[in-house]
View 1 (cartoon, rainbow, N blue to C red):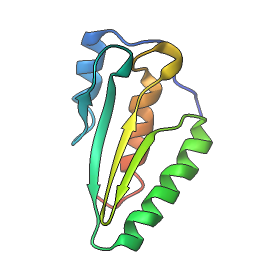
View 2 (view 1 turned 45 degrees about the horizontal axis):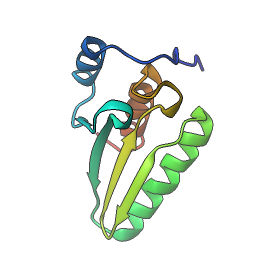
View 3 (view 1 turned 120 degrees about the horizontal axis):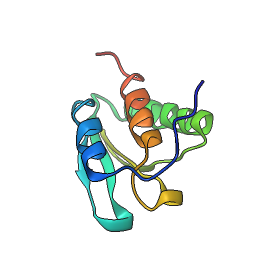
Length: 103
């Protein structure tokens, strides 16, 4: 797999990339800027399986999100600490996170 370039994206690049991933939103600011999406599940066990899948994905990408798990919901938040902002890797990770679930 090609690793996306790891550099801080410019605001216009962020807006363009955000338009390519449905349901993700920009959150935070400065070094804490991130993209996040809330995933809802019918059962708690489905949410747990999803968290494990995101964990596997993050290991494959060597890029790790913040995950907040509640009973039937999981919030996934991607950002790149190394560049103190967002990189293309965050958007690739978001796309691959979406691919873990059926459309």
